[in-house]
Image (cartoon, rainbow, N blue to C red; front, top):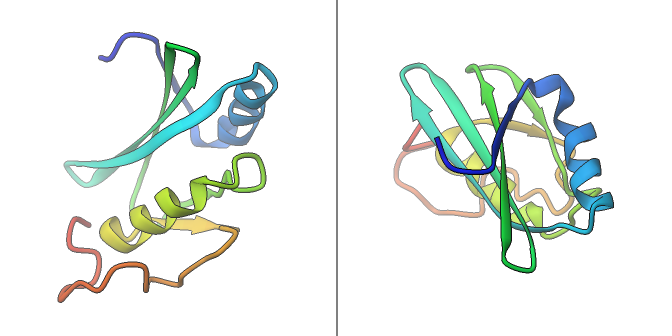
Length: 110
């Protein structure tokens, strides 16, 4: 596991993200990985050179809440995760509805 990684339940995601914002963190990246039939979402935050990760596991068909109301720049990461992995993310500001990437196969990593 990465250093400074906290694994949380999906239900606690928005509260944790709000806590990171309140602490003065900035969003660095969000990435998705398929592990078996499940997915891991890794949210990375930074304050100066201090990096922290928040990991959430999700199952196919589960809906993940968008964090764009807290960190507006997350819309690009969330659209990418939706397009490439097929993960449903609810409430994305600037939702491209699966059209951010032009791929020959829908959700090629899903």
